[in-house]
Image (cartoon, rainbow, N blue to C red; front, side, top):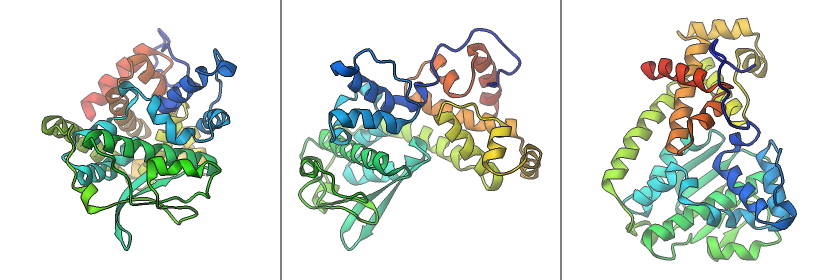
Length: 320
């Protein structure tokens, strides 16, 4: 059962099969709905890679094209942060700095090696899904750079961990002419001219506002260590799958008994309830910045009951 804080009233009005995929899954569903053979279908697909596969049957290169279907309401806050940055180089720095808030399975870091200055993108996902997401994030970022600078910004070299797909000739449109496959890491390199291009959409006030809030959230995100960090990561993953995080489920995942896991957390000066409150507060802030409704947030956080969620948030908002 989902946690209700002993209050059982009005259920949150959202399907937990759909919402945990977030904006990316919703845009994929819209894409599928736009084609006659899928129109009106009730997608009960729980895993994001199944949606990608359905979309790829219609267009194998969907990974590079999906961002064109995103509306501003679908954008992650990091997309706006990119546009508000002073220039291309600083937008890369901000993406790498705040990437953990977008997904705990992806990583972004800056590199400076024999190929020049670049952005390395790590995706922790099975093969096909990793390729789709790499294409999507890469095309998304380059599209934002072009929109922000008003120029045809393109990597001077793009490296991918996956093998060359059948539609590889379409890569040049998004990733330039120099493309390599079967590489140790995904990485997009830019020349010094591109790195210095100013963003026409830069906005110092919005940049300061967003970075202050994101700095606070990243501090909360990193304020875990040892077993508390493992439990926090497990709770985030459970919520991303639309599953209620419970001590019993997380203990099983970590190969511990609930009693042992509870003791380990107490040794770190916390309890499962306190830690879960902190994680929920962090995820709640993320969802609020995405413009989600209270009912959607309640469902994502593991509450069947909207009133129970509103009651609980008063508790963790005092603490966090």
